[in-house]
Length: 260
Image 1: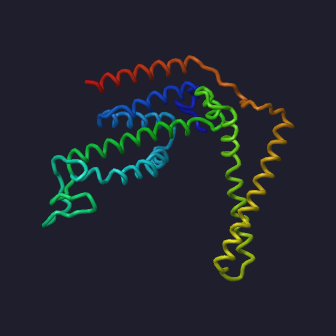
Image 2 (image 1 turned 120 degrees about the vertical axis):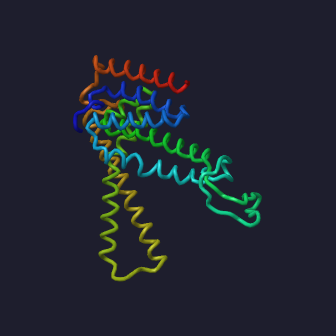
Image 3 (image 1 turned 90 degrees about the vertical axis):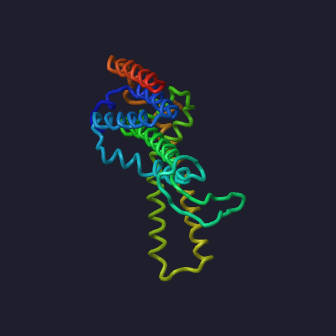
């Protein structure tokens, strides 16, 4: 992980400040404030030496685009009445869809555009805060930091092991599938294919159980007592206090500005 602004901040301090910004993002309704918050996340990504292309793709690839598709109906006047700015369709007589009656003219309204764009920008900004946290914090330290929120250690241990060994199980599944395909001369019947899939699922389950037992025995042989520990215990420094105070001062200023 490359050194940068957020990489130098203690993960616990970073988690608390990001939670504050995330809660404020879900609370604010002004579009200009949301745009400013999103621009702030881009600036933090630049100072943290995160490639902007990678950051923007991870932010906009899934959740905001999916949210944009979900809010498309709110653009139209049959969901959000208001001032029409773009006519989409016009009917000679009312159209009934079940219990709903569509208006004679279907158009995109200014109010609907504001509601949809605000929701998409809010989701994009919230995802940006989470992405910044995950890209600037190693996985083991991030899981250890969740203890600040009183997350049970057993859950953190299971989550850490799942994150570490999930790729191995996926590779095992690919090898099982490749081995099965290399021994089949033609396309099997439907029932035969179902039996083959069930057999591979059973073999993968047996392999995962065996792997979990081996990992647990190896952990116990190395002194595992049920507590999550790090090789390097993080400590709060003056830079962390400066980041904490500066973040909450800036957050208070933005909250005051959003009320004007």
